[in-house]
Image 1 (cartoon, rainbow, N blue to C red):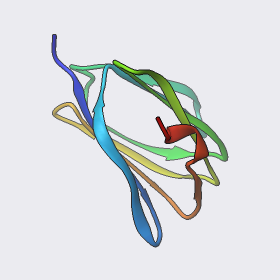
Image 2 (image 1 turned 45 degrees about the vertical axis):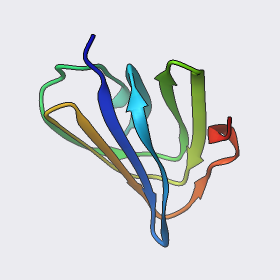
Image 3 (image 1 turned 120 degrees about the vertical axis):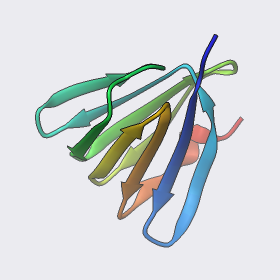
Image 4 (image 1 turned 30 degrees about the vertical axis):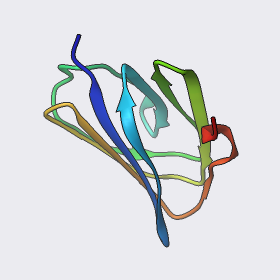
Length: 89
């Protein structure tokens, strides 16, 4: 089974990096669900929750908006501020 390589970055630090089976976030055009094999995309994210689905369950972080890039099963989320309390564990 293929996976996504996910990187969540705030303006001042790398917040989280790891593998996932799916990433969900809300863009200015609506909810995005990213799975392995997704076509390349660059999206503008709005304030809200980013969910990262993986072997250990669902992890989440709250962002203040930002950008999401998908290319070759690599997902990069860039945000000005990130509340990463839901990523622990």
